[in-house]
Image (cartoon, rainbow, N blue to C red):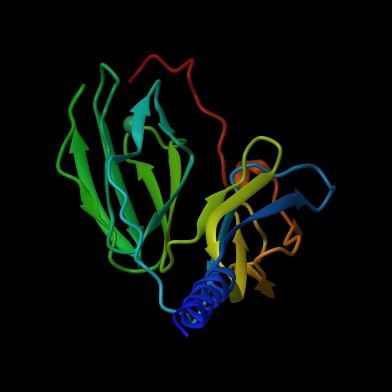
Length: 215
Ligand SMILES: [Cu+2]
């Protein structure tokens, strides 16, 4: 009797493990010329309950009159700091509806963090150096990844279930992310591929004017 119950308990544990098994989802992103596309934002939305992501120490630095990183993904409610690591001033700003802010920064200054409470795209610029641009994608999910130099984004620790996958990029022609419904299973090969239509680079990543000594 005792033994039978133990087996049932073990079966229960096993089946709940396979139902909620965490997988990893590789997503390959290309542009419309089938070149690998770095800096694509890949995230998954679902109706299932999830543990909100806790992230800390997110930085968008200013160095050599550029923002780094160029693209940041941050979960809703998280904060980022904008340290100035140049020996000159920057005036960091955003007029985006998702987050409007101003940070006048003198040389080597690091100010308070900015908290991102609304999902959406935040375009960050500098009033002094008009080519400086960075993009912050605020997402309402803990499941996200950015594509690397090979256009590959991998989302880890993904519970099995139904999701809407969304793929966005600062240079994409469409204002909305490309979406697809997918099912993550415990053992299936969930690899996905996307091709995005991308505008000419000067629209979304202006050439830096490094030679200008006036600043
Ligand atoms: Cu600047």
